[in-house]
Image 1: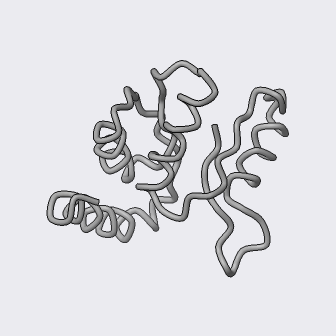
Image 2: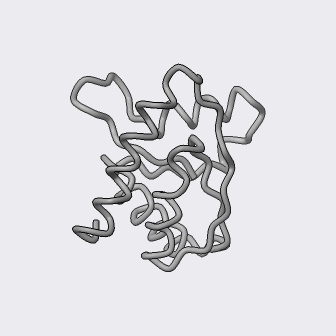
Length: 115
């Protein structure tokens, strides 16, 4: 499953970019499910889990995302009843401090606002 919508400043959806990368790396196109309506992590997890259930796919999943982002992904997966592991993606070390700070506020938002 690839997940992510097309932003106003983007030519294609995030999901379509990930789908093309998977195909270029020998994943058969018919094995790839596309969720391209999500604009944030909350929606990515919620919409992906809904599609998994609708398609009758195994609900034990692994979320592939940057290591800094795994905690927030897991919190949302837990909230929506998903069972997931983590596949940590590479993050350029120069970008890590800013991403960690952004996700720290994202996790705080979950606890304060519930979303």
